[in-house]
Length: 219
Image 1 (cartoon, helix red, strand yellow):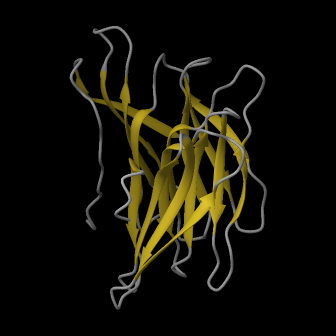
Image 2 (cartoon, rainbow, N blue to C red):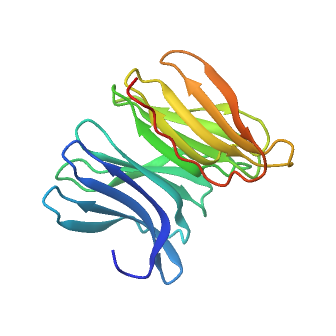
């Protein structure tokens, strides 16, 4: 997308056929929509709107993942609604979208969201309620099931600039920034084995951690 209104909030995933999937924010006269671009294995780009609803602040944070069938799944933040949104597009179909975590009257959920799909097709969305409750959330949906959300970290100012990876055993690896007072700022790591409980580690303490990325080796 060469239009100058394509914004910097973006994410990319590559499927099993080398198709490239990109989610990004698009500014249409100050109405911020969430868009999707796809590059086919033959090198042809197409783009379309995922959500251009009445809200003026969609997609300040967004992420894209693909499943075993190369179907894209997108998480994004609805600023006006203070909620976490989810959208997907089956092969040959159109985009469907819903609130994965609608939050509550005092919540501001969906910030710094990340999405991953495990080998069973379960969707895992990670996001922060950054301003009101300062907590880190895990919202998930099994195939054919409903959305559930757990709060798995209530340390102050957690969940900024997260990155997630699901390994071959469906273990979930998450890194994220903790903000707040200088003495507690830094990079944290969390791991959830399949059927297990969360384990947290401090990776690097200090005020200068800004953003994160994560990859897990095959070993």
